[in-house]
Image (cartoon, rainbow, N blue to C red):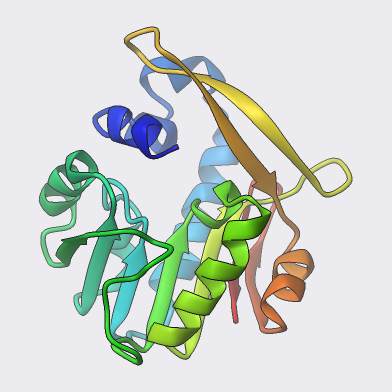
Length: 195
């Protein structure tokens, strides 16, 4: 998965913006819900935050000014530093956060938790709790069906093909994994929770 996101750095935002390979999927309802979810993120009270697996910084922009973006990919961080220049950035592993205990007030992550397989979920939650008392997760909502996970084939503009693990969530399902909290936004495509 790390190699895939490193390779995808310069085209990742095409998904958010529904351009490039994603243009044929353009959906005004999806775009409207995306913008509603972004508004919910922007409305979060400002806290010292680490954005884990920040990627290109596309969502980091909505978190305020006291933010550290962490990603394993130097390519993603290069894009993020241009797109969200008010944040500071660190390269590192999301499952072994390179920060002291209690270094932040909030751990935020966008479309990362849904890629974690079972063994890594507990590691991430423990690390998040170690560095901050609050965890906010933004991810893909479960729509039209039972809770599910799948291996997806994803294709990049260069034609390379990648197999990526992906889970989809309800707000209640996510909070059950975290031991409680609040659903801040839940739609057909996106879910945002705070634990």
